[in-house]
Image (cartoon, rainbow, N blue to C red; front, side, top):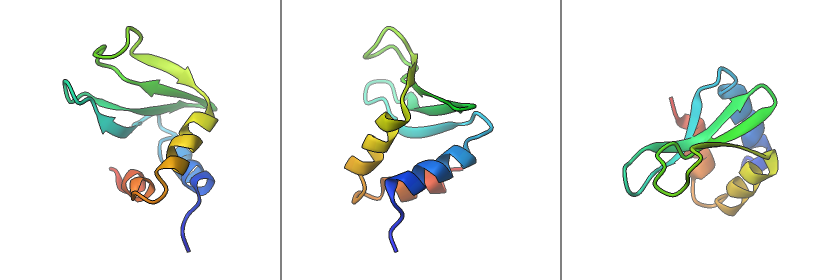
Length: 85
């Protein structure tokens, strides 16, 4: 049985409850690890490197991450994110 995006999100929230970053990808220009960070019930996206934005960390909605997981449900993204150390 395949895990749903919502189940993935719940598992990732638990896994990164300590504030560790869930790396989504590395910046194609400088290789900075971009990803999501949980702070309690709030989710932030850290692009960190300033290559594409002037604000390295921005608050985002849970739906933004759910949409990303949904768009990539057949690419192995969920499995890769859940297996990250």
